Image 1 (cartoon, rainbow over the protein chains, first blue to last red):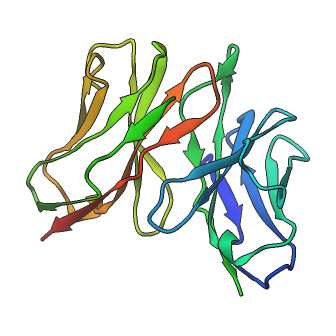
Image 2 (image 1 turned 90 degrees about the vertical axis):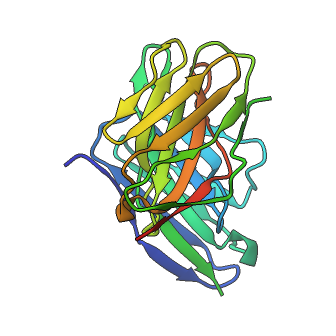
Length: 116
Length: 114
């Protein structure tokens, strides 16, 4: 089945120690998104890739970076995690139709990040 | 500004009964989509139902249906014959075709009582 896969499902890191979260997809979608979701809150978009074009949300901290080496994979790098970065990180994909991505986003299961 | 409001932080329903979750949104755009996503305790976000703004007919997916009132900017979700597996956080979301963002509401936690 085509799907969005996130690894690891649970990640523990130390304060200030860089961490990388991984997302892969078999849907062949052009657009990939990273969301941060804190407990009992709505997901918050951090950034997205439209093909190779990187689009950062205005309020995403510089501490968060992303890489997309190919269509299937996208990485979220947190350079110096703080206690406030503990959250669930969700990857999602959608496909381009015409000028803009189609509406429906498909989500992975998320990676829960704990910062000690 | 495009905002999505879910005024019910928590709802509960008896198994086999019907429940309606409310959602309102604010936009000046005419071409957009609305969604309900379900996020069970395992935390994977799953699409429940989708509505195109240009369609007057309300979307239906099995036991799930919406009441889309475009003029009132209201988009409620009705779950019929509620099942234990329906227990989850439900997010209403809005997508404008001119942007990439999904705007989420704050969610409604649904409990299903056996």
